[in-house]
Length: 229
Image (cartoon, rainbow, N blue to C red; front, side, top):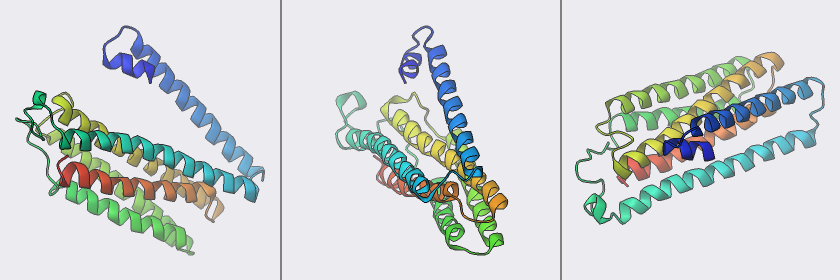
């Protein structure tokens, strides 16, 4: 985070610090998940360990909720008390805001459908239904990301167009990144289910995380697109 902050301000060598930190975090995460799979194959995951892993997912979700609360609060704060630097208006003068209809509404419908398909994957008993529901959820996640890419590529403003452009792209971009992570997690859960033919802790955690991503979108859609804050 320190490297990223410096990189945003064009401070020399901070780019290397940022990418080094990201690389170290990625290597740690990969090694930890690899060890979890190895321990599971050796039968080390008792019921207590499984409960603790799910508790860890909940703690992770709480930390992510705090992140999105801060991002969305910045949108609400700027929208409810615009200052003279943006002509006392929100969205600022010259910004053609993206409305609630169009692609935003389509993305909302896609995530609503994925919420249902993820639930089907958790409660279904037929392995074919479970695999189909997981595959559908991953596909809907990919469709959401494709739609978001099209929205970004046709947006009438950019990340550097004042506070509105910054809050819009950072908040929706972070959410899109979480959709990507959730899709990858669900895809890995599909591979696990095909291997064990039963719901795993990974699958339960992935579905729980996916529900969180869906719920966050309700707040993002309501505050940024519908309320125009």
